[in-house]
Length: 439
Image (tube, rainbow, N blue to C red; front, side, top):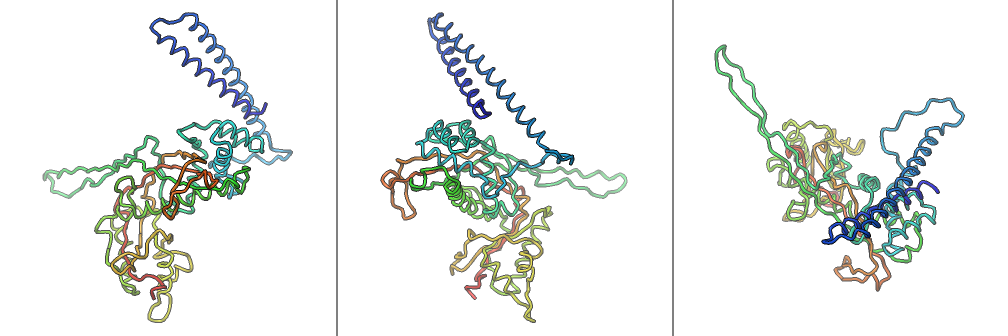
């Protein structure tokens, strides 16, 4: 038996122990306990316990052998072993990161949600590691809870696609469903005085940042023709579709949602009123330069650490800024095209920033922030489920039957929220006609 088989045997023994313990507790709670039945149940529990202990020893022994073989796999070379890795191991092919989740979804769909059969299918097709991981997942109503290591791969894979994460926002755990940070809003003071003058007293003041998890969901319908085998291509398709819709919606939430109801509160609404110029700023070189300088100075003057400062804007606004020229025809901001920076700070672009705001439907938004001050609270788990019978509403607003259309619906749910450590770390403004299309 390989290590995966031994782990499954250990889990089966643990399940027997639980069933026996539940039966024993039920008998003990009876008004007139059946001593004979209790003795039988106790014997069954003891047998299951013995089976579990034996299986556990085999697993630990096999794990020890595996670890020893890995440590000894140095070949004939005398080169000293490399130092222990300080970061989690990554797939040899970065494109395959997070594929385990896609394979799990495919196998569950092919076996109508039966976790054990899906695990067996994955093993039979050469994916024993993923099969064992699926077999160890926790079942939820209508789906499974992806193990944290795999869920973290999915969350990590969002990073290049989501501008707020890419800009440097910090991820913090919200395992209890809430994020509560105390923050200092006022400091103590010092003053000069005469030899016998009384010392002026002062004390710091504090406030708090309280956030609770918000639920982000995606629903991806897939043709059953594509689900006949758990292939790498199919797993990539499932993974990428889930990521794409979740990434775009998360980006919009962290930027522009107002925090009402079930929505996170985004940067636009965390920004202090004095830090946001609704203007709009005109499409001239002088107005643009003044507005950009003002954003940087507002954040710097607030004594923000400026560890990971940067800009967020539409790509069309970035192109317009790059096109500005001085009186001699020289680029006003040559660093935009040369290094992708503005005023020395990196530019991050996303189409989630609108370009049709304002009375003339010609305004966009320009954000500047120290993203080291931005916190994304993560629930940590990713819940996936599938159905071949459920109905769904398509992008046209029409209700569709998955069964009638021979499709499987995949649903993914993640939980998170967003808040800055200091609201003063955000500044920005509305800009009118900052686009080459408008020129």
